[in-house]
Image (cartoon, rainbow, N blue to C red):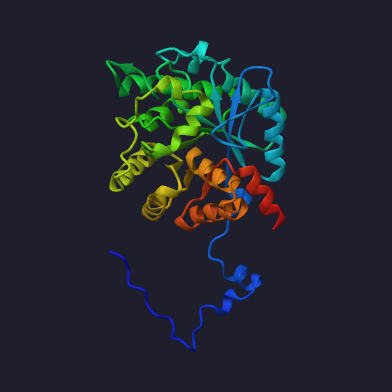
Length: 337
């Protein structure tokens, strides 16, 4: 039940427009602010000589080879962005039903981690733990008779997490939504001597229609075909269930939790932060980015204004960190203001 709003004054003695008159007074009375420190930049990497390949459904977003990824990561670091999140576009020839390339210490992600650690100091590296970039069927886990099996998948995810930690990953971010995977991964990391590695759980990840451009970027859309992920990702209709997911992940050892997507789920961000008070992250996903970018390209919206407004909405809802494809542009803009 919502608490009633207690009047703090009456017109004409109280005029709420007074502090809105000047830019300086609006700044002084602002309740929430976005800072560069809040931003995480998702970065796509690919094999091959091409330095940067545009993602058609995400204007302004590219897949980088390792050499260019180093340059772009250095730029992010210079702007003050604390961390990047790596996502691989795996060579289709290396995709298999069991996603075995995820366990290869020389896979694209592991080589990229080592290159970044050797060349860019002070930048956090977050790695996705899920099998969808590596499976020929495009699902986040092992498929048996058309169904993604839980416990067998978790065993593979634990091995994937350790391989990434061995390469130098700072934050392991399981996005698969298998039951029990946070506790299992935490145990596997600790037993392998990586008790210092942070676990960022995609705790409330919904089976959303807003992920389409991301799947184009990592090349899993064609593998998935017409299949969906509703048997393991959350139903968009559910909110109480999100709190149960978050509570379980925290109990299993998650250091940070995440809500995904972002703007359509601001109510979930608020409830998670209010209920648990733990570091709460939000992912402004590819579909959200593509909508704003496309509308701006058509002259229907001012990109800088809607970009910053969307980011401050996440902060207002309670987010501590924001994964956004706007991170570079937002950081540049914030440094100018």
